[in-house]
Image (tube, rainbow, N blue to C red; front, side, top):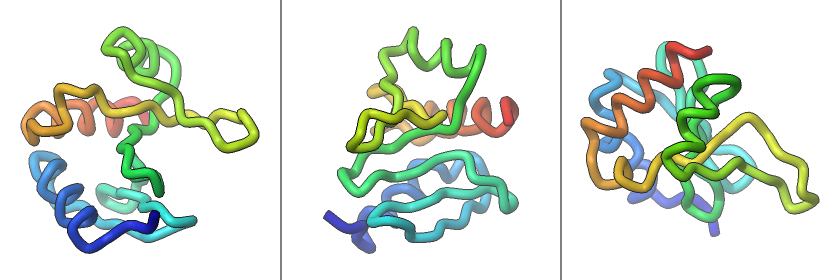
Length: 103
């Protein structure tokens, strides 16, 4: 699956509380930026992940977030956006701001 224009519009709407964001297509997915800083990705499977490590990654895990893994089992420091935030731009924006603050 590749990222569609509708996927891109959804991401921009979901993270509107962060302020202006930008994006760049990559490897079938999307990198999502605020002020030039990547804070999230949209995978080619349509899952949204926030960049996280340490205490912020632990907070996401408590909310049921899953770590991004490549096909060979290697992981990266990206965790799924909590399920409740997928249809709540205010909640998604709060998580995104926490991701940016943790960088």
